[in-house]
Length: 66
Image (cartoon, rainbow, N blue to C red; front, top):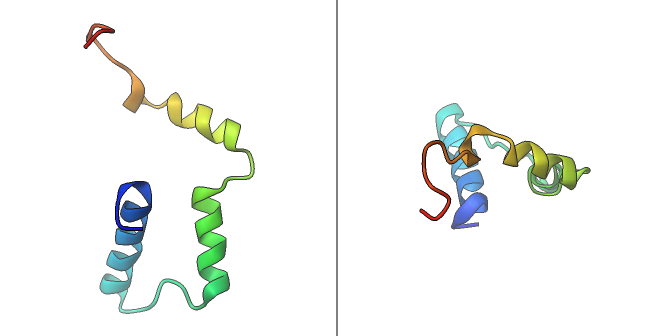
């Protein structure tokens, strides 16, 4: 959980804890539930399509071979 999406996720949780002064997860069950919600969606196909349809994946005026 040091790099990539998992690293970013962990950093956000640590920042929340630093700002609020409270632990984000009170126990393993809290951690597990949020982790599964963010990394193991019930309908992974729909989640993937929704991510791919965001503006982040549009090439704009760039050529396909760039």
